Amino acid sequence: MGATGRLSIAGVDVLGLVGEVGTPVFVYDEEHIRRRCREARRAFGPRVAYASKAFMCKAMAALVHEEGCCIDVSTGGELAVALAAGVPGERLVMHGNNKSMEELEAARAAGVGRVVVDSFDEIDRLATLSQKLPHGRPAPKVWARVTPGVEAHTHEYVMTGQDDSKFGFGLASGAAEEALHRLRSEFAGVELVGLHVHIGSQIFALESFELALSVIAQFFERSGLEELCMGGGLGVPYVAGESAPSITEWAEAIKVAARRAGIAEKTVISAEPGRAIVARSAITCYTVGTVKELPGLRTYVSVDGGMSDNPRPVLYGSGYEAFLPRDVPAERPRVVTVVGKHCESGDVVVRDAHVPTDLCVGDVLATPVTGAYGHSMASNYNKVPRPPVVFVKDGSWRVVVRRETYEDLLALDA
Ligand SMILES: Cc1ncc(COP(=O)(O)O)c(C=O)c1O
Image (cartoon, rainbow, N blue to C red; front, top):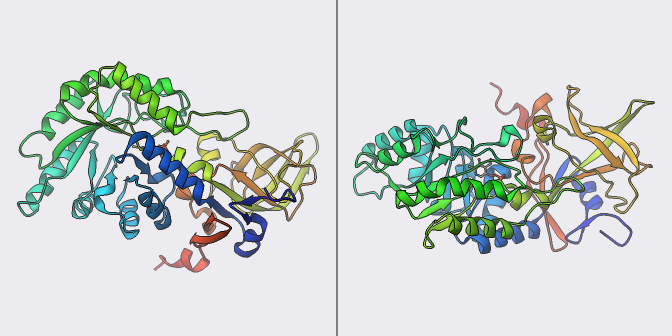
């Protein structure tokens, strides 16, 4: 915060920045991301991966690599961005519950460090691929993704560890056992080196991870494998009153639980946080376009973005705070509904936003904690161009993803 109460991030006056790039805009504090990457690397070691689905662009991939973390890519598109940023294939982990032959080929050509095998069909595809490729090339190192049958305390759409899941090989059904057997066959064309478990996202309760570990431990130890990735999923606070464990505390809880569950000391335990690295590093700035008072009902404050730059409130009913960068410490006694500009009544940005009394048309309004699953889930619904992404550091800023234009929107039309 600047001396006048105006918002400043890393020494940059945010309203000045907005004056130059316009709204909506995602503003990221680069040093904040770097600190989280360094914390993750310290906590889990060099195989920790940033889950790029949370937010990805070339600048982000390069930054994560510079800070010594691997990158989890879950599609050919994320793989292409990481490679375009100069990240060596060896530092990538390839995910996906339906990887195409082309994606597997691209991963293989890039020398991806770990492929996380998700289905029996994928095992077949990998075997076919290994026959197509010249002999003498090293077999890709793979992890088998196991669903431990654990229901994490989170929204059902981001729960992934339960038996009824599209992801991975179920433990209880025997599918995981069968997958390991097939991956070890001489025809598989891969080198099985570990297991992967991911129970969901936005999880505050460390017990959920501890439970997953206790469920998987015996199977893991019997497998004789040496690498165990516990996925991502650590939650972050979005609204006042929420609190979450740090990455360091999360890692500690996982390691303690692993030892308690009998997992050997020599096991390389890693993780792939997305949200916990990047969510709190960014805010979104919008401009208020209309204020509609409905006495006795509510006040609608419309901004120039909405569900196209942040679909989380619509998808999961997620909550956010809102404030005015022109006066950060201002009291926020007025309750309004911040909505976007899309043709949907459900296009809500913040349902019950507490804002200063003097909020008015033309104000820049900011929502914090929008660094994860905002830009990466953004769409062009209603042909709204996606906002730019700006990185701020040491008193200066740079546009790392430019604002889309109407020409961009038309670029694919025949
Ligand atoms: C396999 C896998 N790893 C990591 C993540 C990252 O999760 P989060 O952003 O909650 O840390 C996800 C997200 O759902 C995922 O599916």
